[in-house]
Amino acid sequence: MIKESVFKSFDNKTALEHQLAERIANQLQAAIDVRGKASLVVSGGSTPIALFELLSHKAIEWGDVYITLADERWVDTESDDSNEKLVRQHLLQHRAAAAKFRGLKNMFATPEAGVDMTIEHLANFPKPFDVVVLGMGNDGHTCSWFPCAPEIEQALTTQALCLAVNPGAAPHGRMTLSKKAVLASRQIYLHIVGEQKLAVYRQALENEDEKAMPIRAVLGQHSTPVDVYWSA
Ligand SMILES: O=C(O)[C@H](O)[C@@H](O)[C@H](O)[C@H](O)COP(=O)(O)O
Image (tube, rainbow, N blue to C red; front, side, top):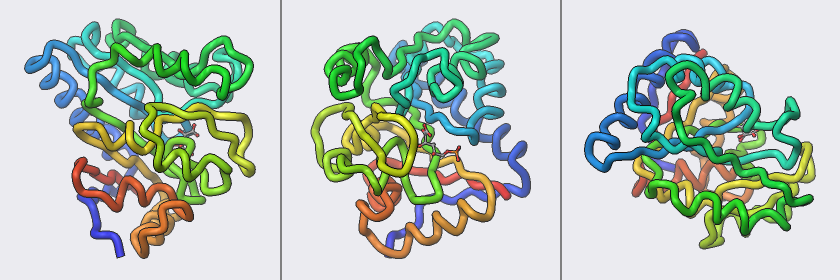
């Protein structure tokens, strides 16, 4: 059994998004107040879109905020499957347009060929990351740590910041932060919506087999704070 993290439950997704956006904005500004800059790692997928839009209006010193992605699909950054495109459209707008964004995709043909450049591009990011927002798939993946990927062991054990992943059951090659990189953060949020995700989350707490449900790599550790934000 995994000991449960802080679990915040909301009746509706809008209430969750307002509270989480407020909390993230406060944490980023607090980091800037103390260290002069802040870093934010966000995920793609459909869940965070409204959260991004709320965050983009927050009155913080966005010019001192460095933003990157937890994972990326190796597609053109203009593609609808690109997480970078999602972030540009929904987060890097309004006040947040002043943030310093670095995506994980580069001009190399494959994520394997591009990984060194991705790592180099993140070299100047304030670390530990101040805030990391993760999503979760119904197979228990987070970032691009897919249970079906041949690289899953590597994702959970490498000392490197990023790695290339080729999930068998999901489209596109990927670039993803490693477990080591994600856990080297000040605060992690797991943002999940709906009954199905709640059931997956409960199942993840049942044992510690990280390769079967990689979200356990985040939920099963207690050195980095993880707050789960769930709404119906
Ligand atoms: O690029 C991605 O797809 C992600 O970063 C991924 O880890 C995502 O967070 C989950 O798959 C949940 O996706 P949904 O929010 O669409 O359910």
